[in-house]
Structure formats: C-alpha cells, structure tokens
Amino acid sequence: MSSTLSLENAISSPNCLIGTFNFIKKSLTIFPKQNLKRDQKKKEKAFKRYLKAAMAGDSDAQFSLAFCYDNGWGTTKNEVKAFEYCSKAAEAGNIKAQFNLGVCYQNGEGTTKNEEKAFEIYSKAAEAGNTNAQYNLGLYYQNGEVTTKNLEKAFELYSKAAEAGITNAQNNLGLCYENGWGTMKNEEKAFELYSKAIEAGSLDAQYNLGMSFELYSKAAEAGFTKAQNNLGLCYKNGWGTTKNEEKAFELYSKATEAGSLDAQFNLGLCYENGWGTMKNEEKAFELYSKAAEAGLTKAQYKLGLCYQNGCGTTKNEESI
Image (cartoon, rainbow, N blue to C red; front, side, top):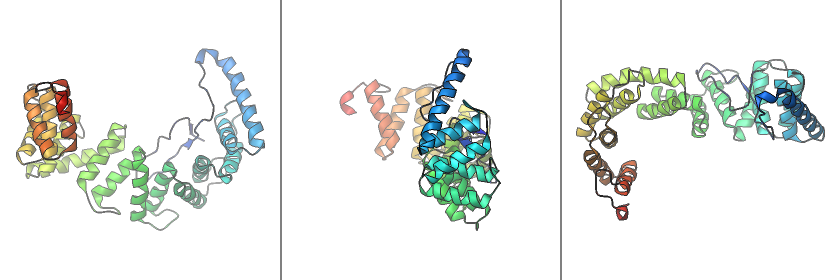
C-alpha cells in the first residue's frame, strides 16, 4: 500500500485515479531523527493505545491502527490488517476510512481488487463530503469505468473537489471548461483553473496551459482582448512559454487600449513593480484608479493600498 501522512498526491491525468492510501494522523507526533530508538518505543506505545481503543470500538483509533499496519508504524507492516481495521472504521461511519477503503478495493491492497466495490464506497464518501472521493468518483464517471459515462456528473464532482482545493480536480475541471465536457465551453475559466493548479505544483496543468498558450497566441494576434491579457499572464509567469516580462507588458498595453479592465490592472502592476518597463508608481496609480472607477474590485483594493502607503499619490488614509 502506498501511504502518505499528508493529503494524497493525486494523479491528475483524466485516465488515472488517485493511487495513494491517505491516513490523517490522530494524536501522532513526528519525533526527531536522532532519537530513532526512543521514537520506536513511542510508536510501539502509541500502537498499543490505538489497539486497545480500537478493540473497544473507537473508529478513530481503528483508522489510526490501520495507518500503523499500513506503514509498519510501531508494529510489523501488514496490509491485510490495515484493510481489516480500515473496514471497521468505515463501517462505523469514518469518512476518511471510507475513502481509503475505496482505494484498497480499487488497487487490491490488503484485499481482492474490486473496482465496482471501490465505486460504491467512493460514492458514499463523496456524498458525505470527502473531496478526494469526489475527485476519484469524477474520474470513474468521466471515463465510464464500472458505471455509465456521465460528463455532467464528472463536472459536478470535479467542481466540488476543486472548490475545496484539490489541485488535480482544478486541472481536470479546467479540461472540462476548455473542451466543453459536461458544461458550456469557457476558455477563460479553464485558464483560471489551470493557473491555480500550476501554482499548487501541477505538471499536468502546466502541460494543458502550454497547449492553451498556442490558442491564446492565435486569438491574441486576431485582436481578441481577453486572449491578449491571458497571453500576457503566460509570458509574465512563464506558463507554456519562456518568461518574458517585456512581452507581457506589451500585451497588457494592447488589451488595455481595447478596454480590458483586467489588463489595465495587470499593466498597473507592471508599472508599480518595474516589470517589463521602467518603474512608474504615478502611472500605476492612474491605471488602478481607472479600473477601480469601472468597478474592478481588486483595483479598488489596490487603490486603497496606494493611498495608505503613498504609492503614486499623496499618502491619505482617509481615502481608504
């Protein structure tokens, strides 16, 4: 069983499922490496406490005990035992245990592989609000594996998981918006979601945004304002291309001239920070002011900071 002490590192390819057994520790402590012998004694002592509580029917202890068996933490590694205690905790309503039980059935870890059973358990955990189960279930619906293919349902599940911060769900939701899978096609929303996933370290989102970069380039050349702004973001951050702040500045300028408030705000950032142009706080203030007057919330906030800090204008905290 491939375990982790943190949230699982989900595989975000739309053809893959999460392949980790995620246990959230309960009352466990990470001990200094230099005290390994003493640490082992503490682990063994914790294992005995979990065992005693698990035998008394405590579902959290059963889940923690499954973690111990899965990792060989304070005891001998035993996937069958891990499955057994995870099953008990899941039956008692422990949602994290339900998700991990689904992973066991999906991968045949500690039990016979049974994807139909995995789907059934993920469905229960997803309904109870487990975001990782929602993501896995979305993949089943997207691919039509052990259930009827349903892109609308996949979109719905990715949306819930993405909103909760599951990086791979953000990437897959981006794919849905980009391709019109289960929802109306919306390349702006796809770009936004890929960007969030990239910030969280998703390589798949980097690839997908790289593909979008080519499309934005063509659209920007054709004069589409939103594409010019988004292409500027790609150049500014090195998404799908080599980082080039001068090029980003140029694209923001074009989009601003065409009336894009987002580009106007981004151009203000360029002037304020000297990205791709000479630093000019007065010009930045001017751009923030125009965007703020037009109702752009982030520009209004930025304008408040300018008054507070005297950036490009006279310091005036009464104007905040």
